[in-house]
Image (cartoon, rainbow, N blue to C red; front, side):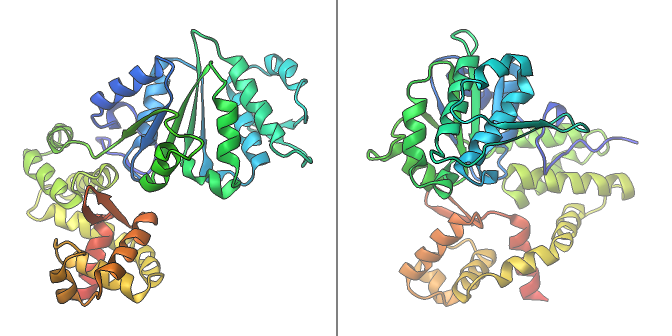
Length: 365
């Protein structure tokens, strides 16, 4: 039985990785110099898969930490050090850690072999993090800098209000680390790296990761569907018409279409059937999400599901009763911050095409 060539919901590589050659070349070029990189893209656009592929191919040591999982400054230090233990021999690290101002507690899980690390709360809680960052700097060299990837970097303010100033004071003196700061909130990341009064003002090269080009995505889909159907071109175009080339949802829909093709063969409307299957499988999730919105949220989302008219236009307000444009604008900002809506240039769209479809189907039941 053939293996489904589409993958979503986890980091992808190899044959599952969709065309990003131009972006890979640019990012690799940045990392070969003294530069740090700021990478912005909406969630599920594939930035994690892209960065992991690049750093793996670089053959350099790297540390990857999602700031969303960090609970405190001391936990930040523990999580970083845990990842350092994964790539360097324990004996090599011992001599460095002896000089830490606050010695961590390190236990190796006898089953998994994973280190469990914690710092006893001290009166100077920033000290462990500074020691760990300086340790990483010492482990790098001029010829082989360590890459430190900090995902969802805008979450540092949740951890500590002064963490940005502290991190900048440490990082600006380091020469053996290339930092990659990633974030899904464009407005917050720009605030950190482009506002003149910010500690991280112009600390690195800013790059926005957009959708994969429709032509390239069409080719990617066609090549994989060609193994099981002679309708690969039509299927690819129908899939992209629904997902608008969103990387995650395109892979999800293509995967579902592929499974239907294997089980039942080609039939007219197979892409619509697959899309409706996805909607049905997430019905409870979408219902819970919908019930957390206020009335204005619902009205705006309903209008955006039913038309392509700008939600800030008078026509939209007249058709869907959303009221003043200032109220709609506040709603759009809030929903964008939550990741429900994406803003591309001056255009607003619902991020999840299947949630959009769910709204339409529920309204038409």
